[in-house]
Image (cartoon, rainbow, N blue to C red; front, side, top):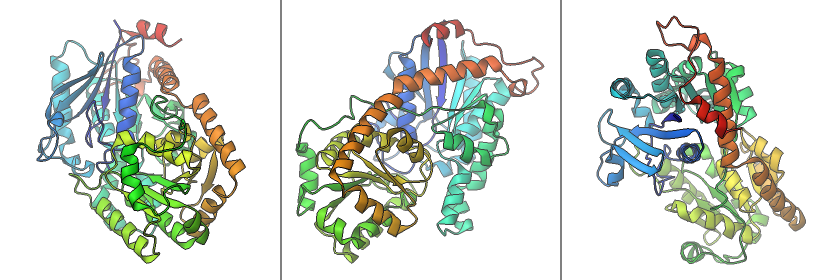
Length: 474
């Protein structure tokens, strides 16, 4: 018998096809990571079943896919949806009062089932809370990935001048941090994307144990993200971009992110607008996702309005293309278009735990200018394909952008370095193999402290299907 794995991915919109990435702040990089990891594990020898558990959502204007209790994605990969809380779409900060209801529903489901998962992988603080409660009550091994940490988020937002009381009200950071502490205390394995996360960001938690954490960088879909075959633009993209730009063939600065204040798009627009060199020789292309959607978070509309105000202040009409409704399937073509024109990819986020979009850009042959906070440090150390900058310093950001686009020979070297670096260090096959090796090692260790409350045994027993896994990951 092979192994069964359950992922807890509770917030945002998630389905097995046409991921609505960028719908809001809760449907982004974590959603893509969970989806790709589940796909990878489902195709691995020794794994029988991979389930991703999320919410049933019924709301006007939303596709009926999100209301189906069971969705078969591929053989061995299933999305399971349970109701908890009201049926309407809720931002993740609004889910906290309803998580104990979900714990009860999952436990009831497990007690009726002939088989439980061999381990639970909980994602983000909400999933971590539910996973920790299930570990306490049922003794199931817990793997935890925070994706972004409440303490780190609070630190960066306070440093940017935000009011502490307002942050608490908006993001429920105290509750989030307490849930992260609980998940870290109950986890047999913590998976991070970078060593910086493992050694610096998680280290701010008193429950964190470095010896149970492994840094395993995620991968890139090489079938989607690859260098351009030649000049030109996909017709659908051309129809979106060219009417917005007076000289659409100039090398662009491309930013691709959720319309979230933490992504710091305003600093990028200001750096571009203040630079005579950038304004005269380049275009700025901002792909800011789909906007507010069903979320109650007002960040998206605020970010777009502020960007438009800045464009007008600096007189950037015809130099900036603002794309607010770019479908996910257009992103690979957009990256190739920017690479073919000799542009750069810019990530000005205040903090970036990992930066999957940076890898997608690198796989497309597009050099980078990125925040020096978090994951981009390790990506550029491995790939040597651009510049890091303190994005809180607008003048430093401006100088880095000007420098990155000033030397064609260096641009070609960076482009080639990025392609090689992604192939060598970032693939989903390598991620899946390293992930399963780490799970195997940690479950063998089975710390007694992680046994469910009331269990007097000496550790968590080895899962039934473990021999099947051994053969698949050597």
